[in-house]
Image (cartoon, rainbow, N blue to C red):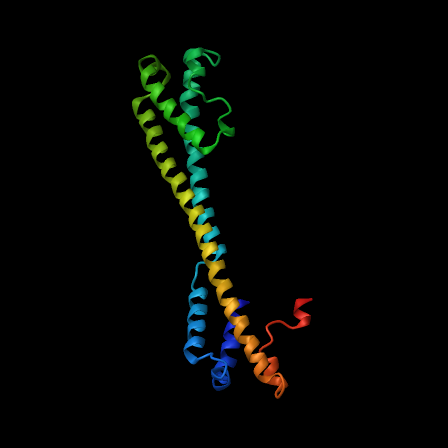
Length: 206
């Protein structure tokens, strides 16, 4: 709406450049407003930033599930070897894995890989291999990168949103100022041109 209104009002200002000059509004100032409007139109919208953030989040969530599956594969073998209620099993801290936060899943996976390497000689007959544990570590590294990327996208979206709001507000303030001048220019001698500078009529506000 700001882009449409801005372009429309700028075209009227250019038509009435001479009259605006009498109020200290020069062609250069009108061009600066137009340039700001063009820059605003090129800004990444919040919808675009949100979609980018969502895409990274989905990838991160998929990696989290992959990591949880790898953890469960090891823990099932730990259960077969030591029992689910054993001290060895409990020290891995994998209880309620689905309810853990991203950071908790990451830490748990690191613990599982580290402790399983310690117990590896006792787990050989269960199918746990060094390659399986190295794969968990690799998944941890990928997951950590995706967590960071998601955090970056969240920060980026907030920054872009605030920047866009700030620029939009500045443009709107200037536009309102200029249209108020245009309204005054034609208020007493040309109703049609006077109406050109109305930002919002009563009907649209209702």
